[in-house]
Length: 219
Image 1 (cartoon, one colour):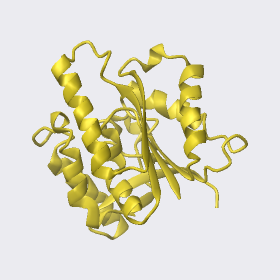
Image 2: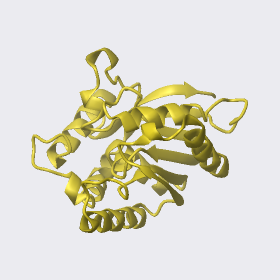
Image 3: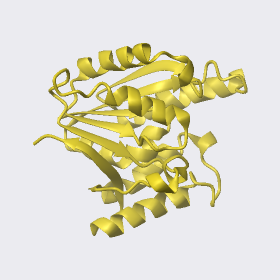
Image 4: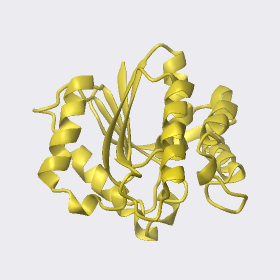
């Protein structure tokens, strides 16, 4: 299969679907990563921070050894300044290139505005009459974003991926983004990431799992 994981920011792919990516790659599937934003125009960031982030992105690519990866380099926290036509067009180009059977998106109720915008653009690129190769659309659970959504739109997973053999590697991957990890009880602490996987695993009857919501499935 071809699987495309779309992250609004670098680290979302690992937080939400890192274990799943590792499992699918180990099974011989083609896993692609599309990252939407970059730090270039983020005014509070120093040049040192920007250089560090790009080094982290390259390290993540090497860690997973994705089939291929793409970076649209749109301005972080400023996706509302990009027209819908541009956002949809650029994402559509990648989707048509990859032709994924599975597409994994951020949750539309995430608290970060970039996540909402990316979901809306991406979902516009899943119409069956234009993208007939897409057979499953999933949204992922990203600590510090999904868990802070309005309680009326809580994330309730209906698909679980057993990542038990890949849990330690997922934690290794997220530590590449060292600037994003802080001590517990920070939502992106190693303890919290592992605790969430434990909860999802218990629901699925395995040790560790990642939870997803199936938005659409064609079988």
